[in-house]
Image (cartoon, rainbow, N blue to C red; front, side, top):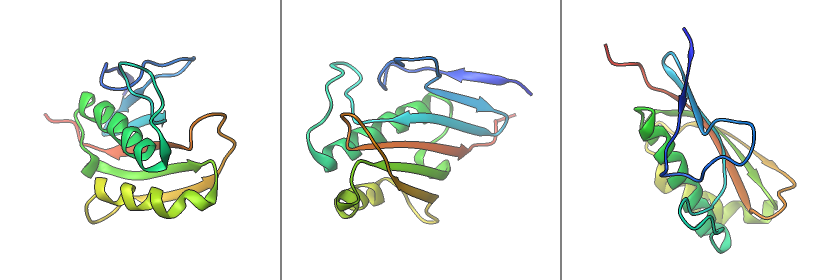
Length: 127
């Protein structure tokens, strides 16, 4: 089974040598996203707005690949500072339903963004 690239104008265009997303069989892998508006490319202000914009970007890529946020099984979150965890988590929790995806959260050097998130979704291909 091959890799199928996922592209959408609903998320910021890539700025390097990577794909916005890939479908490989029944799995979708979404590259790390930050809180940039896909049209203006402006970074949202504050952790809550950046988290929401980041997850909206992820949702757009998932939908372009035939999946939803409910299909997410794993996320990796990079926070610029652990003091941002509580407000980040409050917004993050509104994007998912039970059972929640597994998650790893790490502190990272992010030059401008406060949060970056990548996800893996399980979305069986329709036959």
